[in-house]
Image (cartoon, rainbow, N blue to C red; front, side):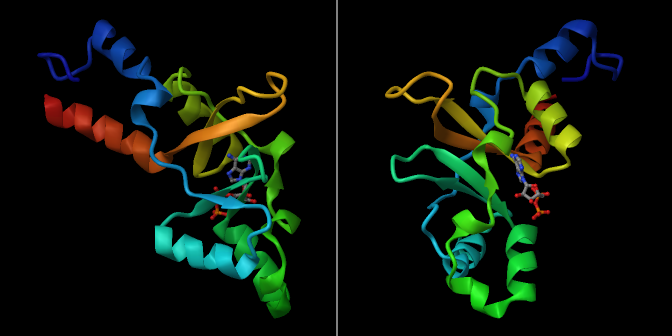
Length: 156
Ligand code: ADP
């Protein structure tokens, strides 16, 4: 994406920043809110991710649970492993999300502002009132964003 003089020209810069979340995001790793903390830890290792997206029985976004959330609860209390993740997850009104048509720049700013590693990519649920429930369609991470930048450099 670099111009002939080795610096991105204005047009190239804009094209990079206007890439959409929908072109970059990965597959979400989703668990149900009834999943136990033990099972959630197993999923973290099996799926090789740092955060798990939690959905309710209808498959709508309910929350998010990270490595530190799981470490914190199990260190303090080993018997916590049989509790459902719903007891420790960051709950929906507080979950930062993006939509597929948002720009990657917008997602990157949210990740840095909130000091988190990833964002669920959501669309309004077809059933129910818009804005009330969200269907999870993907997950965008710091790694996705860096990889997009590296791919652009490699295209050069
Ligand atoms: P880790 O805890 O493994 O370092 P993060 O830095 O992503 O992972 O998470 C830090 C905290 O922020 C955790 O308590 C987690 O529940 C919460 N969190 C993670 N992602 C989001 C998000 N998209 N919106 C709101 N909170 C989040």
